[in-house]
Structures are given as structure tokens and as C-alpha cells.
Length: 74
Figure 1 (tube, rainbow, N blue to C red):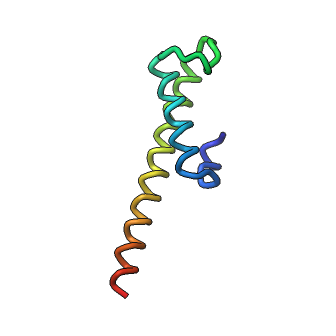
Figure 2 (cartoon, rainbow, N blue to C red):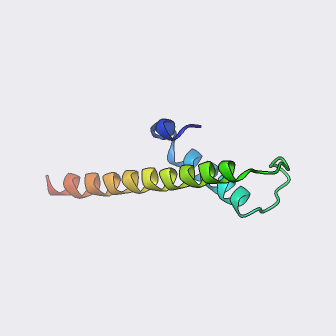
């Protein structure tokens, strides 16, 4: 998944990916995640993707809220 492709995914998928990346960054051991050692560059990329996912989810949430607000006013 690339940062410029986040708009293609649903909110649920983005939340799942964000949770998995966050678990890896915090070094939480999960059976479903492979046990590999991450380099600093991998951790930096994962942190950037998490920030981009948070921004995308916030934008979608604001747009839905705005749509509901405007929909009621018409």
C-alpha cells in the first residue's frame, strides 16, 4: 500500500492496516504477523503511512459530517 493510494480503500480496511502497523511499531507480538526485524527506515515509513491514514480518515469523517449538515439544511 502506497500513501498516494489510500483513497482507494474503505474506512474499515484503513483502520485494520493502521492497527496492524501501529502494533508493529510498538513491537507488540501477534501470531498473525511475521516476526521480522524492522530497520529504522521501515519504522519511519510505517509512521508516515499511519499519519497519512489518520489524515485520510479525519477528512472522510469531516466530509460525511458536512454532507449530513448540508443535507438537513436544504
